[in-house]
Amino acid sequence: MSAVTTNQPLGTPTWIDLGIPDLDRAMAFYGSVFGWEFDVGPEEYGRYTMCLLGGKKVAALMPNPDENATEFWWNVYLATDDLDATVARSAAAGGTLLMEPMDIADQGRMAMVRDPAGAQFGLWQGRAHVGCELVNEPNTLLRNDLVTPNPGPAREFYAAVFDFTLDGNADLPGMDFTFLRRPDGHEIGGIVGDAAASESSWGTLFQVADTDAAVAAARAHGGAADDPTDMVYGRTADVTDPFGAKFTVGSPLPGGQG
Image (cartoon, rainbow, N blue to C red; front, side, top):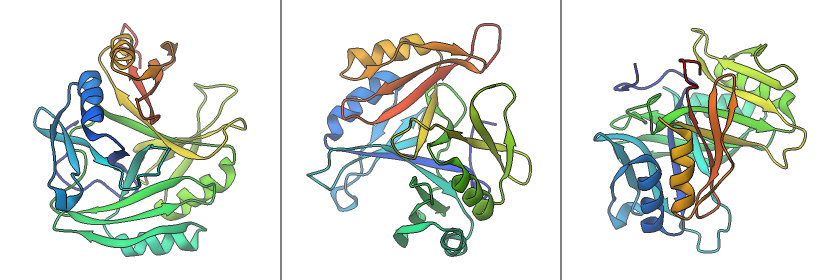
């Protein structure tokens, strides 16, 4: 089901947010591309703004507190039901703690970690806020994949911390792609080994009804985008928002493939 009402199992991508220098411009851009509405938070919470689709939370935007920041990216948060235990497992597996566990009012607890390959991700233990309330539908989060020039340590780390199984992908011959699956067999994302990548980072893929239309909207509202291409799983395109934050949009191919 695409509606989420309870905390996701360990390791599942459960929330995404983006810090940018101009909240109003970001809302105009993402509202145009995805049809989102916005609930702007109060000043005391940094104007942390919920992105809504049909009244359900699908992501968040926030003004970046660092006025000198020049790089911006979508953060992905992986679910945990015991933040302190998962932080300890991350450290034991070679991860670096970037932000100590902290309470976010009554919403939940979070921490930020860097894996041994250099990719940053968050951990989220939900309370009042379980994370994305709608996924796997047009204009919501579909999946997250880690792209890294050093996939070996990344595979070992995520398997050790989250008990993921690691499987290859025969659908993508010639590509170093590893499925990450929970112990129950559910695929939560993957690791892409790319020697040409300049750094390791988690990517964010949003499902859309029409990739070409999403690309046109992004270009018309101050963003940039590659031309859409077809692959075995659907029609996709990489998009860059007006601040340089990157994400991917994808829609199923005609005939139900994807």
